[in-house]
Structure formats: structure tokens, C-alpha cells
Image 1: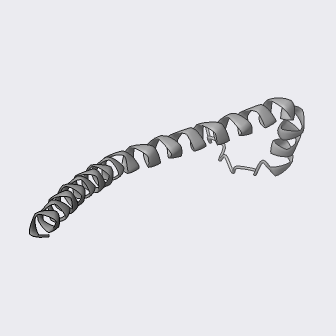
Image 2 (image 1 turned 180 degrees about the vertical axis):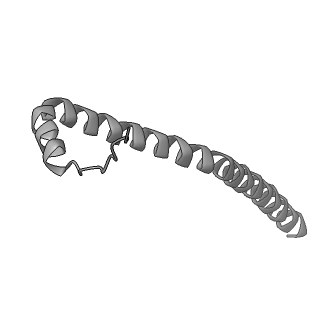
Length: 82
């Protein structure tokens, strides 16, 4: 009976050590890769958003130019007195 109990405790110890090491490695990988993933995701999102805006500008550039002419503010330019 004592031999059986010691074997069960030995197996449980090995299993718990394996579980602790595995979860520690997993947590380390997540902690190291999370900032890299967030950075890449942010860059890819901005690049995709910029390309979408650029394509929509190319498609509608004539309307954009007319809108820009309408919204253009008059800048006061003083004349040079001679």
C-alpha cells in the first residue's frame, strides 16, 4: 500500500512539474509575442486604411478637386506698395 501511494505521488509530482513548466512557457511566449502582434496589427490596419482612402481618392478625385475649390479660404495677401 505504501509503495502504491509513493508511486501515485511520484506520478502526480511529475505531472504537476510538467504542467507548471508548460504553462510557464506558454505564458512567456504570450507575453513576448503580444506586443509584437499588437504592433504588426496596428501597422497593417493603418496601411489598409490608408490604401482604402487612397483608392477612394483616385476614384473620386474630380469631385474632391471641386470640393476643395469650393472650400478654399481666401487668404489676404497685402500688396507691396512702391
